[in-house]
Length: 165
Image 1 (cartoon, rainbow, N blue to C red):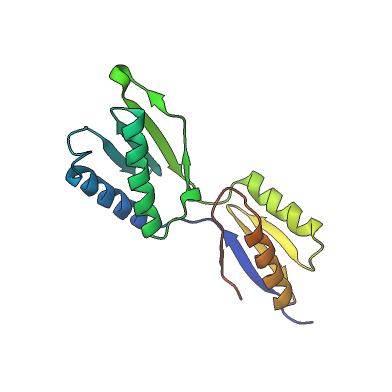
Image 2 (spheres, rainbow, N blue to C red):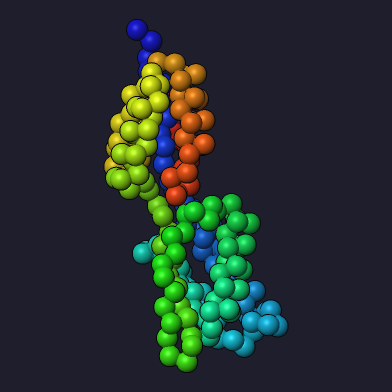
């Protein structure tokens, strides 16, 4: 019997690239004439994987988030990797929002991927291993078909396909 080939479906974000994008955004905030003296801030907590954006108004908050989004995209980070919370309004009309960096596939999405691949009747075995999903098959063509199938669907997080062997 032929040896099974496999690949892993993961959702990983390079935290150093996020840090670089935040630093570039902060630099732009201090240099842009329309945002220079607004008191807007962007902070990144690498350990917790959170981004915090604060601004004196909702309009300025939207501008700061747009700057951050453009820097993240320029650094090849999918915007689906940031899950933004609700905007909190503080005293004096100031606004704050916290975003969480999605790292790893949670159990609910992993089960959904597993179910959809099985329902599609591919000749593969799907196994959930922690925060990743491993797909096995004797045929590389089947594995490539599964990759194409998963790329067509939106799971709300960026998916990468690694360890293809």
